[in-house]
Length: 91
Image (cartoon, rainbow, N blue to C red; front, top):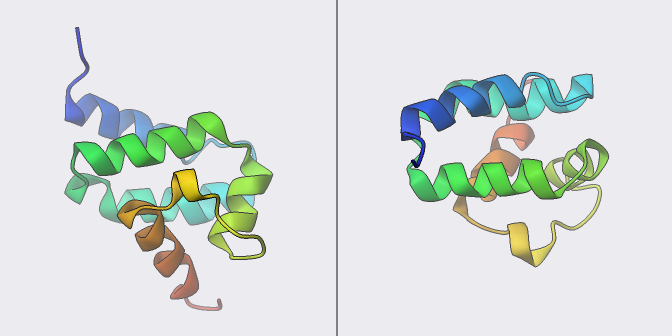
């Protein structure tokens, strides 16, 4: 049986605050904490794919724009995540 969006949102909240690296927890977890309730199924799918298919170091490099985000992860949700990281105080 497919999981409800609310169950998937809860899982994202947990996963993004326990990624394995503190920096990724802060940046991705902060984005999710502020935005997960507004994400539709496509947005949730995008974040789940990013977390499942990439390692923490790559995610950190991509969202801080140290390296180019691969095309397969380019979408409105990751664009919003990158903008969130750019606009954080102290960034």
